Image (spheres, rainbow, N blue to C red):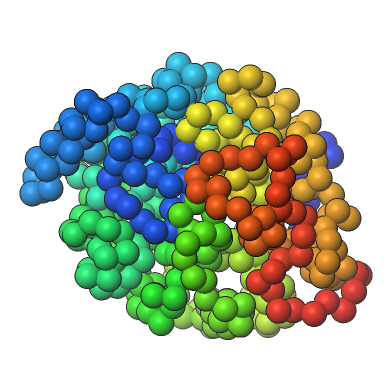
Length: 400
């Protein structure tokens, strides 16, 4: 299972999420980066964004730069030049999939320039993580021409009213679906992301059907992790997690969906998949549950590197240290790559090599600290990222 993670004995980054900005035009209660309209922007820039958002709210064709009320890097965020240097450093290590996200990445005018540089000049596979509300046909054409190969759009309900209430902005659902349609018309593959919450637990399959109807090719189910604003949300129970994962994987095994489906932040899905019959893991390209620090990391808007977006633990800063040095020599990342370091049930579980437990949830539920979008230094650790997965009810038989 782990052979694809290695090259010459080293773990290489295969997927990197780069949060381009703290700014966002929505206000979602589960946001891991505590993004908002005003985050990272000056007062004048905030007013310009508000005016532009009002101009765009009625629909119509939006030109590049007007698509989101955009702007350059906000206060403290990596500049365009720093962003290109980061891309150079990443390309020296491997050719991963680079997900440009936020906040809302379309709030930065240099998004297109950075995407073009990564895809066209450095040969990276570039995707976009967005709420979809700012994508018109012209924006989709620009994304396509810049080399963006796929766009992931967040949908949290099959109901416009429930989605809008969750996202904090009226009309967000309609505009997200318009954005998806624009991407499809312009030849960009679409993935739908849904965060499982108490509010939408009963309609996950309706959202999946909606994703199929709008032409998505992939559907990723995100399970809540207590970080950012998400620390204030009440999660579903461990038993409901287990039930949801089992039911979803049964549908995949039975061929009841054409979507490429993957649970996220629920690494125990690999154990459940192995326990079930009829699932070809190689065909699904599932290699391991938790990839944090193994083949995956996150770049914060201000240049800090963390093992994943939901684990707010700074392992280095690209403003101070080359990405290659951070990736290969961070003590935290090294500890994540040695499965003998796992504690509690995870440390003795026969599925530890293919699951590993969610390291962010282990940290979040042992820290009892509301970091709300901030980062912590390893020396300031208040939680244990190597603790057992607190939301897994499985009792291990012991190591193989």
